[in-house]
Amino acid sequence: MDPEIVRDPVYQQLNQRLRLLVGREYTFGQQFLTEREIVQRFSVSRATANKALASLVSEGLLEFRKGIGTFVRQPAISYDLRSLVSFTEKARAAGKTPSTLLLTFGKLKAREVEPRIAERLQVTESDLLWELDRVRAVDGIPVILEHRFVVASHCPKLTRSQAEGSLYQAWTQTHQLSIAGADETVRAVLLTPEEAEHLNASVGSPALEVIAVGLLETEIPLWWERTLYRADLYEFHSRLGPVQSAKPLRGQFVTPFQPPSGK
View 1: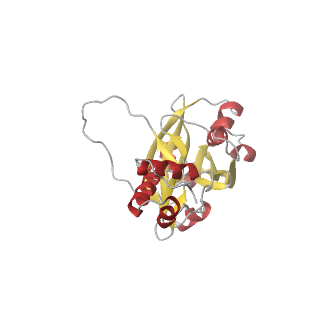
View 2: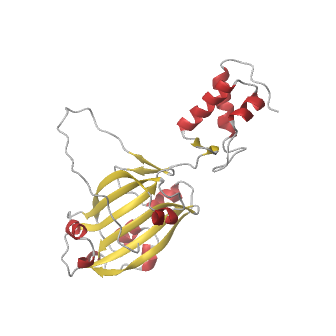
View 3: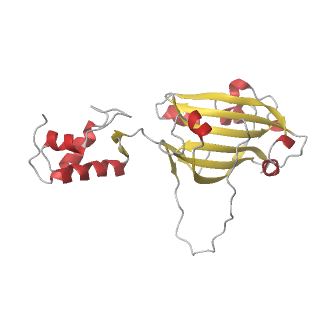
């Protein structure tokens, strides 16, 4: 049994003790100590144990699963809203192993996609597009589901092996394309049964949906994508600028995206 906590403040000491257990006795995904077990192990009140657990949940070290218990949370992967960063490079920089499962890779005519997508890509009905569906994973855990169309005339020799790795690297290094950035819209959605299966998540669990159009330096569209990020494993980060005078809100009603049948 651990030595009894005797110095004040009790709550801060308990919080620190529990924080040290994460990564030592309990690894990612494991169920953590219950409130009762904390009371018995550290000789504290239930109120103190509850407060400490709640604090670690708010810090992101633990997560509460209703009806099951408290678990050590898988570290979230950050997504920087201010710049385009390769998923592959980001995962490796974090000491993780990235992998890609290529579900779809092939060409189709622009007339075969939704008109609004063709319009965003500024292509005619006869233009060719690469179509890619990919599941991106870190250390074997699926975290991203992508559906993407790429204007084939900008990278006509795109290969399957390139699609299984970093597209940003293939475009900039192999195909010598200069990418200016992407226009993105981010919102919260619930996973459909098919999406949940690909991401190894529960049906109806939350995800972050990104609809984006990638642009070359000439402001010509290169790709359109709909990408789903598991909300339990991804955090979106941004930095706001200085305070400005209020402006009228601008926006529009949106229609939920319906993936093509069979995807």
